[in-house]
Length: 320
Ligand SMILES: C[S@@+](CC[C@H](N)C(=O)[O-])C[C@H]1O[C@@H](n2cnc3c(N)ncnc32)[C@H](O)[C@@H]1O
Image (cartoon, rainbow, N blue to C red):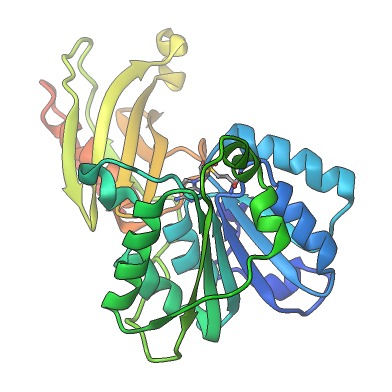
């Protein structure tokens, strides 16, 4: 498993694998059955596989460990963020998507992975001639993905033989048993230039501010949503630390979520008495924050909220 939050982006995959080799990406590996099978069958290739479900990740990790595979890295992260930030231009040979969540209702189509925006992003990271390979039991998803792939003019539809392992995944076996038809489609990247997808801007320094004055002994807090950068910050609640009788340990924890188009983070902002009547407001390392512009906005939002309190607080320093 690769703890991607600790890495510089894009990730230097040549450092992570024991061999310099073609790089293949799988999105939504589920229990990892297909991933393990392919990695065993193709020891000459490297595989990066993504999943957002923690329980799936745990099961797949055990599978990789038992099989002693060194050419697979599993990551807990959503596809769009990973494709944009972890890979360089022309670095991927293929992206495999086996049985993506179908989002069958029309109003949920926007949640489907294989839509125009993903095809464009993928083309900015796949090699010319590289492929996106879809397996699905959902005819509407297949038709949707085919139509979406044609909007950008970057992919050709190719009919290829279905690799055996594709219809041996947990979901494929279940649906085969139920007698459902299964579909397979290859989208081949024609090498035309896609849009530019920059790597996310990220700072290494923990953002902070310093306020002078006293926190009021009691205050009311209402949930707040503040727009910042490309996303928004939600201040959910404030808790006071149990050590509050000890002046030097006076601390408040603000639970925040930071929502950006492809990244959602649940973090804590700490307000801590620094010395005398100074309070330091900083992002806690809890949750391994990715310090984006919107994440820095969390310090701004908390600082501005503190200024609305019935007290004499004033900003001494803003460093975010
Ligand atoms: C229907 S399951 C298929 C699992 C596996 N490929 C198989 O065939 O057995 C879809 C999987 O995709 C994962 N998933 C959904 N959206 C994702 C995303 N944006 N990035 C990575 N994984 C995702 C889900 O958690 C789920 O495990």
